Image (cartoon, rainbow, N blue to C red; front, side, top):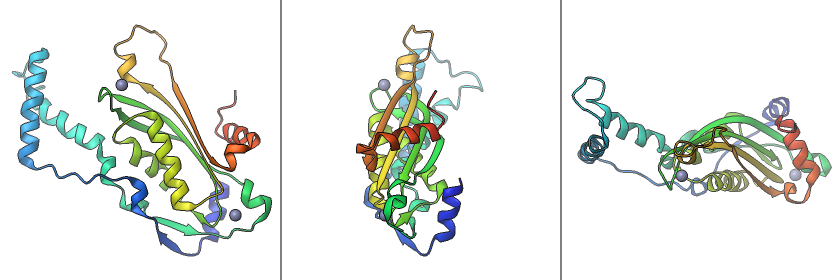
Length: 222
Ligand SMILES: [Zn+2]
Ligand SMILES: [Zn+2]
């Protein structure tokens, strides 16, 4: 993305972002607990119909528990996220209107109502003031909040608030679209609907032109 390349050239110093914005939840899960959870999972799967007498399923409870732990690793944080760069605010309309936009960023989350996946794409935009963040960090930020037990609305709010707190930018835009397996797996609909959510901070809140430029740049204006 050319704006970002330009911004990277202008970068001067690195700073630590405040980890509080990431709303972390340190997890101390012992091996003994994991083995107990595997027994619970095995009991449930078996009651629901899974047969454990084949090589294919004998390890399924262990894989299930590990996969769930891994899919919610966003609570642990991401040390590579903790840097932001200084740039030059040149003031004037340029600083207030130039957007940095990244997307689609693929994400996978677990709905906290059913512990089943919802997954889709995030588009994140911001208008830098004195700080910028590496483009790959936007992907990390999306995944940090998605890989939890959560809801789509909260993922978007957390991304927007974290960027706001880390960069103090002129504005933040977040658009998420996702398929929710908790409704789709159990429903009878043939089409698979997309749930769409938008979050605006700063300049985006009162500037419809910025919002439509964001959607056009994301390729979402059809
Ligand atoms: Zn659900
Ligand atoms: Zn500025």
